[in-house]
Image 1 (tube, helix red, strand yellow):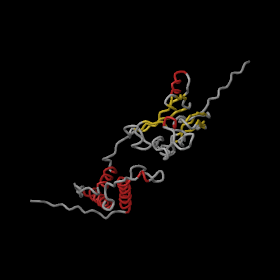
Image 2: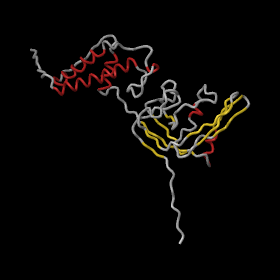
Image 3: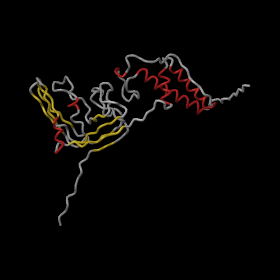
Image 4: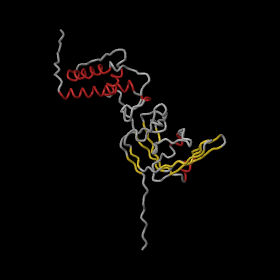
Length: 270
């Protein structure tokens, strides 16, 4: 003898409708990001052409419908306890189901982010900081000091290497440049390599200078004004899209660090 039990599912409440709508919209946002974007998923900066995939994987037309059904079937499962398998088609709506899995925690992993602070000053053992060099010509090598101050490194466990060409502005551990503006060569036509782009990366209280020579053109002195405070106000606070491989996207967690010069009181003689 077979017994069939029917569970009555109540009409959705206003709170349930609002919750399902919010979940559906979040799913659609994650879906369209997977289909169209290579970077900048939170639109924390103006969208550029190089952040859009040249070949789209997935079909936006079918994805919102799949996630809509997913949201409402989930409500039925919650009320009835019914075991259910959701079977979809050949893959065009795959991003919608990946987004659903992410929202439910199936694809969630914990990646730690932190900052390392390094004091740089070209004295004693730190004289090695003056070992930066460049071949101005085949027979002439220049050697310079990096700027002194507080150099901050951003450690991101979510990135496996420092190949900033493959993942622009992101790496396993990268120095944060307090002066992320481009450094142009004396003729104004090229950008200096990352070795010189980051010479003034440290935060500090001093104005510092460096003079670089461009073969066949001449020299130019570059001045770095002091930047005393690191403020991680947004992920792109120290990222420059003009030099995406030579600047860093940070956590955007609101961390502040300030460089300062201690003042000591002189002992009074009696």
